[in-house]
Length: 128
Image (cartoon, rainbow, N blue to C red; front, top):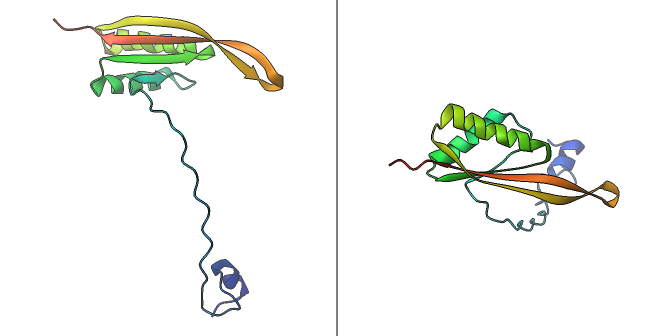
């Protein structure tokens, strides 16, 4: 037999054994997602080897080049990632292009500040 607590949890009215359907929650609207490029690795605060592994995974999927993107304090980690890749894993790695830039960020209190950005494109050297 059901006690009052069971009736409240199960949604049973008056203690009888008839359970009511719970009202459905409204469905979430789908997020507008932009397709991500599969050869881009965003550098953040994780250890360098995590990003090295991510780059190796991208190369192993058949991509010819990998783009590493970083900003602010993560720029040095992006450079370290390329160096570890070049010296330890892919001996014929070539730095194809380096793009430097600045993004304007709005911080709390509507303060604006500039954040440096870097985009490093690396490729494997064509085997002859």
